[in-house]
Length: 368
Figure 1 (cartoon, rainbow, N blue to C red):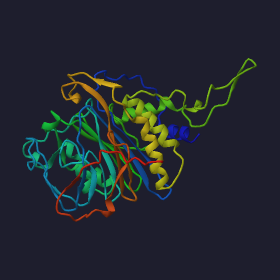
Figure 2 (figure 1 turned 45 degrees about the horizontal axis):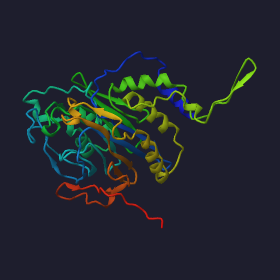
Figure 3 (figure 1 turned 90 degrees about the vertical axis):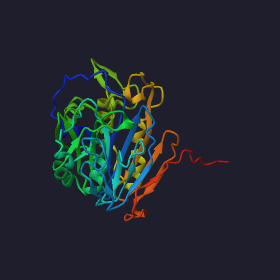
Figure 4 (figure 1 turned 120 degrees about the vertical axis):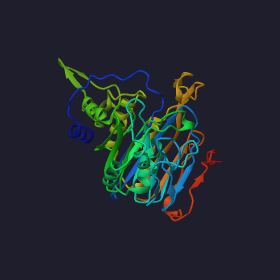
C-alpha cells in the first residue's frame, strides 16, 4: 500500500478533464529520483529526440568564465558568470552547456522539452546584460548553486530570454528539474513569460503540460499499488486476476508525457529501499520502461525535431547518477553498455572545459 498512500498524500483527488494538443513536437524526456539508505539519492533521466544531438560528456571546472547569451543571440552579450562549482554532464549540438548533469555538491538536473508551455521573459536591451538563453539554464544553475533554495533565489534575480540557437533551428523551449543533496526537488518553468518554480514532492518530471497539471493528474491514479489484489466474490462465484500485476492494472502504457509521468511516479514510489549500488541498478531497470525503439514514433518531414527530413524519434541516451558518490553513468543508443564518469577523479580547478567522446562500441563479455 506504500505507493497508494504517497499518491493520496500528494494528490488533491480531483479528476481532470483536460485534453492534450495533438501536435506535440516529438521530444520525450523522463526523469526521476529514488532515495538511498545512506541519505542520498539516485537520479535517472532519458533523452529522446528526432535528430542526433551528438552529445559529449562535458566537464566544467570551478572558476570557468561562461558567456551569457543576450537577446541578440550572441555569447557575451548577456549575463556572463564565473562558475562556483565543478559540473559534469552531457551537452548537445556542440554547445558549451549541459542539458543534463551533476555538480560537485550533489545537485543533479536536466532540461526537458516544453514546447507547448515554455514562454520566456522579454528583457529590454538594458536588462539583456542580466539575462541568459534558455538552453543555458542548467549549466547556470549547476555551476552556481548547491541547493534548490539557492537556485530559487538565484533564478529569480536574472532573466531567461528567447534567443534562438542556430543548430536547433529556433528557440529552445524547455523546463528544468533540479534535485539537491538534501533530497529536495523543484521544477523550473517559464509560463506566459513568468518564472514559476514549484516544489516537486515526488522528484518525477516529464514534458508538457505544466507541472501543476501533472500533480493534479496523480489523483486519477490513486488506485495504483504494487500490492497484488486477491480474488473477488460475486454472487457466490470467485473471480481471480488472470496473472500477477493486478495492483498496477490501469497504469497508462503509451509514450505521452502524461502517461510517462504516472509510470515514472509509480515505479519510483514503489522501489524497494537499498544502498547506492542497489539503487543505481534499480533506476537502470526503471528507466528501461521509457526507452523508445526506433520506428515506434514516426516524425513527418515538417516536424522540426525530425530535422526537416522526417525520421524516427528514439532514445538517444539514458543517464543514471549517484549524487552522493559523484558517479555519472551514461548509456547510448549505439552502446547500451553503461559508461561512467567519476566527478571525484576530475580536476575541479582545470582551466578549460573538457569534452569526452562517448564510446560507441558495446563492451561485450565473452562467456566461452
